[in-house]
Image (cartoon, rainbow, N blue to C red; front, side, top):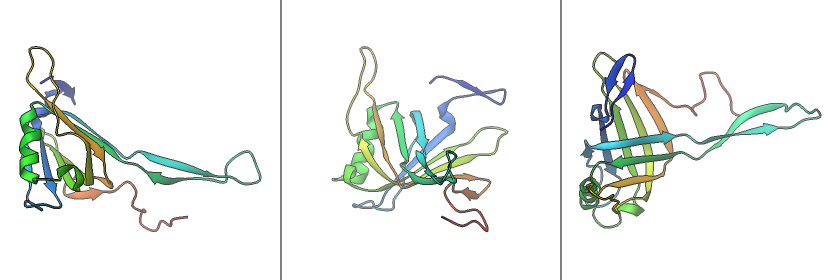
Length: 165
């Protein structure tokens, strides 16, 4: 795994734990832990809407929609295979919750919760000459929540006293 620097310290993805939990099937609600993730990505995919008025300048700009996406690269295809077995038939048609926790020495841990994820890409294989087989899961989800110090932060929740247009 390639190392990277954060706050003057060197880390690798070995500091990250990925837990996936299917909503349906024989193991519905039972978590599956993957420890060999080599690629992580998740984003809100928010889109703003401008409300036009009688001038060139918009009257308002507001967050109007979101299309969250995520992807997880597995160091080895065995993780993909083991999760398929954990879920049983229909894994690509199920909703999943995914929890990614980064625990770093001397820093507060952070967890990203990918809520109601659908796996659009995965349960396959990829390999280069001289390398082991690997796989990648990716898809869309309903929400992306960050948890720091036991407090959840939802970027789309209205702030206290806020109102939606």
